Length: 229
Image 1 (tube, rainbow, N blue to C red):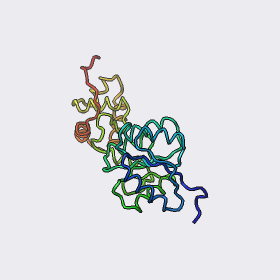
Image 2 (cartoon, helix red, strand yellow):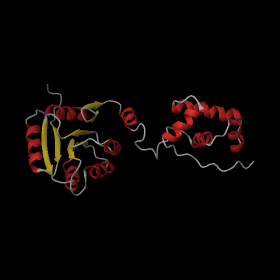
Image 3 (tube, rainbow, N blue to C red):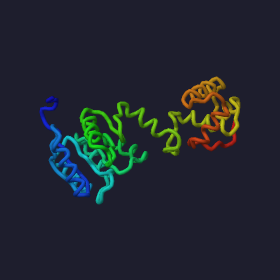
Image 4 (cartoon, one colour):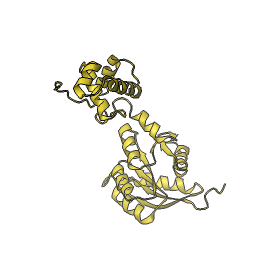
């Protein structure tokens, strides 16, 4: 029952006094939680978090003067040990990705049932991540799933090396293995090796599938100038 000798020290940050008050009352009734302060905007939240060094910052995503993500960015860059759980009215895919990459430990909906909110706090304090209604045990896999098709097409290279992207570009342009070898001054065997790696990474098995994949996923293809040799 007494897992934590020390209560979890929580800082609340939300610009709606009524919501903040209700949240504080709810948390204070839960054994093992202690609300150490309340902030009404993002700038105040950052200042109070640095001063009070709470274990957990419950931070509203949409706030005046420093939105939630800006506050996460600032606190993350200062190497704070405070874990940040974002409260939001709607879970947007891009915001989740950005928040987790900036160092937040979770995102929970404001409309969540009380028990769900308490579960999210316990999960984050136990070292896990939390998104929406569930605990996330493997963040990398979760983000990978979240970022699949078209989330951030411009940056997506699917783990392809610069040379592999050149080979994909040549395939899309209709070059044969022999053409590619001549164009880049490498052997056909090397081209075949690159193709094999590309097929594995992208999960395709023919040149046509590869070309369609490259176009649909908007891979950063390399413009091909005519072979000079």
